[in-house]
Length: 434
Image (cartoon, rainbow, N blue to C red; front, top):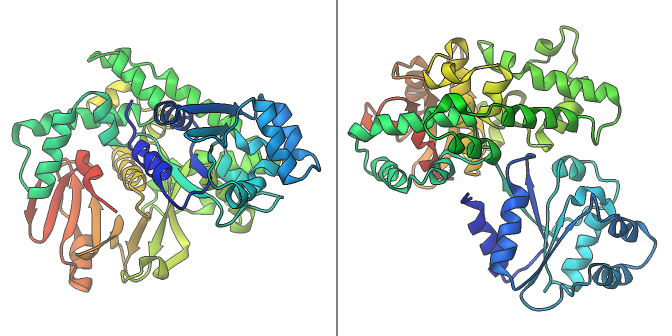
């Protein structure tokens, strides 16, 4: 399957200011597969190492030997000279060695010619809780997410549909008769989400959605729950992590949709759940959307850190967690979950584009789902609607207060522009650029 992060990997390879690369992302989003494919295609000499199994390397870097000796002994253990031109070394599951992570500074400062890529499960959690010094400024970070809707269409060989969507987005022209086809693929995406294994299972069943293998998503969820036992202080923290994760659908059902510790436990205190929540964020299992008090540049300077929403990192996983079955999703019968699942989908798509998740909360009940900062048009408010009903008091309030150049509404309606609102179908969120 084609992944857009491949282009970022090529850009890293060709950069002059070279640093070791760390690829971060939620488990099962395809990190190992795409890095392996990239290394095989783009380099003449390639070696892959998995520190879950290559324990001698973990022992080597845990030893008291000098950085230079470790570096030379690593070549011997691997029987691979990664100093040679057109060579790359891929260290998978690097979280198994804090010492190796710390030694990335040596690679950068003393052997900047070496092409080194690192990835791992729960690597974000490990980096946030390192006991060894992190090589600040000596590595490049690259974030990977589940497949966005454009990548999903690529997997189904729908490049002509992608081109049509992008053309209509740019020119504010309706899709016409093609609109329904795009909506059909959008609903398929809500079913599978963006996890590659899940998408492949949907492709394998052809147009017979009822043969779609839901066990793929169930297995991923089970893996996530097992991960909640790793890199934690104790079992109490594990239980708190699980309780937060399980509470998110109820959190988003609140009228305000903001995250409330009392939803987890009526006696819960924020200080007790701050570390477990941070674990979920660093593991990339959830995505935080912060509340902006005043929509002015820079938006991050006006964030209220005590008010935020939390989304699941993948909409397919969300649907599985609330037990929405195939018929419910495909026939658009999600009822009370429809609105928050649609909003979660938009959050995932924006995050995959590298856009900070921010929203605006005004007085009374006025709230705009997302805010983005554009290069030429300033701050643009975004509202999400789950169907074709598009009336919105909140956008009207925001418009009267701040007079944006234009506003965006995602819904099931076709492209259009009316009353200063750019209407964008939900399947076209990927057209929004950072």
